[in-house]
Image (cartoon, rainbow, N blue to C red):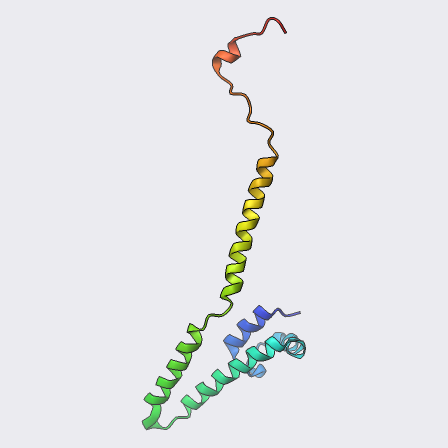
Amino acid sequence: MMTLERFRALAASYGADLRRWPQDEVDQARELLAGSEQARGLLEEEGVLDAAIERAERAPAGGEAAALGRLRSALAARIAEPRGWRIGWLGFVASGAVAIAAGVFVGAMYDKPPQKVTVLNLLLVDEYE
């Protein structure tokens, strides 16, 4: 089963038209699309970008600069959108909590620090034991 992250990477690489996708990925992508509203939304977003690129390619010779300018600004706006930053911070906080819990667990495993061993302690023999 294809993950949403894999689907997102393929959609960003190959666009919204599944005919451009690698053939071994298409069936899994269709399955994900059938059951995931989020996947359909991602594909729709990529379709908007595909349409913008296609319009820019078909622009008349005199309007190329303007079309490319609009395309660049649309791409810059999409890149600037914060995607998934909350999940990133959540992962950061969760990994910090796990590290703290592991430290407490490891610390609780030790009763007390071992007695300091010195040369003098080794030479002294307790005759009364």
